[in-house]
Length: 374
Image 1 (cartoon, rainbow, N blue to C red):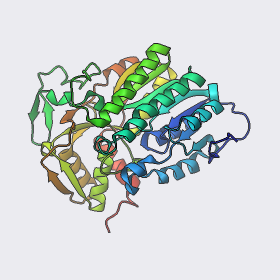
Image 2: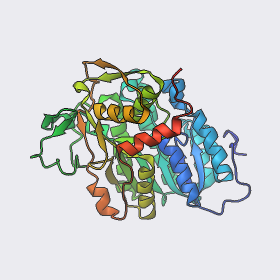
Image 3: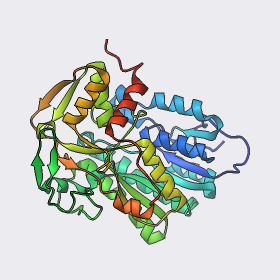
Image 4: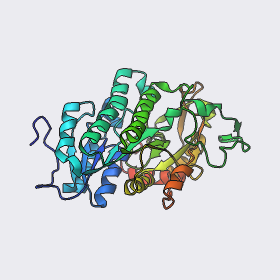
């Protein structure tokens, strides 16, 4: 046993003979789906997760249930460490244990809410920025040839998207059809400077740039995926994070949903965790250095809040309870649709398979036995 490192919950005996995928935030939405996906491809998965979501969001956000399911499903293909990515000593020992057997690092661990970040800026920055630097540097020291995938965010663009010319329609805001972004959405070339980011956005910008720099300066195989609404049935839905899952949960349970600003017509593009993981697999199979990709549903899968409520009501047969708050959240996007053409040009065989109605229906079906009205 490694001195100072907790005994793993699942461990394959003997010497590793297969490639290792190391996943941080492995009990979260994308982390747990990454563990399943790459275990099914034959990799030994090493997961790092200490359920910080419970600290951030309370019991609703806890990923304890996800970890139980994950270890049960994957058995000896999965090894779990209850370690904080801010703990350099323990993190270093995990990387030392697996070394060059690690062929893939997927870094999803984060404080994910721009509302929450303002309450504890030190915690937010230490988890998002310093934690990312820790994972990057230990990857460089112990497995520099590994593909490194970082879950960044569209919040790195700050509120610059809100300067786009928008048109108000019955159920949504929409970009002016004459604008060059109309056909595909917002590209990676949008500036991250001169905008209001939120404290969360600041920490994610620092992490995003660090991942790029380790790719360019050290020649590592890194990619920042700037996610829009990443979602799916494995989401631990909480009010401050998990838009579509939490919306569906509120409708199913009869909770009141607090809807902030823009007349409820703000638009998000949503991408299912399955489609996220097939994108990650494409990068893993043909990695590049210092890449940046927007990652969202694009024009294929997007919705306003009003439209999402309508779909959820049709699926559940229940009316939504909505408390509208006039003031929009600081730094919130009024309209955001990801341009996926850069990633598609590098990986032309990748396809998106889930749109918003399909995503919401699957969330409903996966949680019908536990998200019920009392």
